Amino acid sequence: MYPGNQIDCSTGSPPASAVPSCKVSEGASANAGPPIGVTISDASSARSDPPSSARFKEAMARFATGVTVVTFDAGGEHGGLTANAFMSVSLDPMLVLVSIRKASRFCTHVRKGDHYGVSLLTGEQREICNKYAGRPFQGSILLEEMDGIQVVAGSLAQLVAQVVDIHEVGDHLLYIGQVRTLAIASGSDPLIYFSGEFGDFRSRTGDERQSLRLFWPDMAVE
Ligand SMILES: Cc1cc2nc3c(=O)[nH]c(=O)nc-3n(C[C@H](O)[C@H](O)[C@H](O)COP(=O)(O)O)c2cc1C
Image (cartoon, rainbow, N blue to C red; front, side):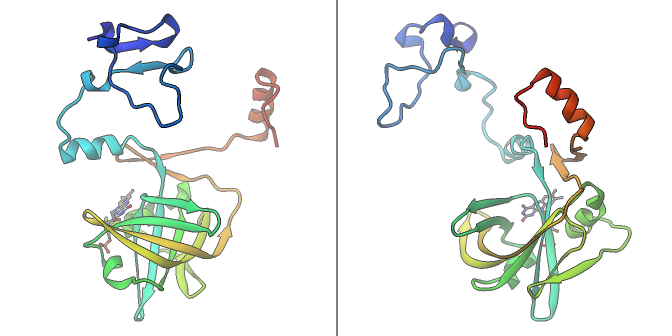
């Protein structure tokens, strides 16, 4: 084992026998090595517990995300769920993806060709997130219609996507949707989810941006 289980590339290579295995992609030079100053840790000798599902969930919870409410209106029924497994997939065509547990009501109602709505929640919409996650909820929710789908009013952005593909992956379905309509609000900050807790992200004020510019003159200041 290489001392400390780490290789500091600025101090040269360890003996070949001690180098943790690493893959060099095709076309890349095996001799080039990582850039100076990059440290590679030997993950196999770090805390490598067997990947129980609890541990997997714990690791994934370290990935901070925004929070969305994904909605459907099918057969006269409105429904939806809170989801953070949302991402944009392609710009041309404009595609998004949401990963939904197979047992969810969404999956029994939404088929290829149907539409679904995605509302990106603001920091003030935490209660709405609880409601769509099936948790105790107080208050009321204001919905508005967009392209035939109810979306959450006052969200950071709302979009309606048409399902172009559904992939069954493990215990989830991946819904790839082509974006048909979108709306963007201004002036609100997002709801953040990290390690099982909700948090806030606050945009910098104009004054804060200006004072940062004193330290980093090249920083773009709107
Ligand atoms: C912050 C947060 C993020 C969530 N993300 C997802 C997700 O991406 N996919 C999913 O299937 N469930 C997710 N859930 C769980 C669903 O919101 C929850 O199971 C919901 O009750 C499912 O709706 P249903 O009762 O109609 O099936 C999330 C819950 C929370 C609180």
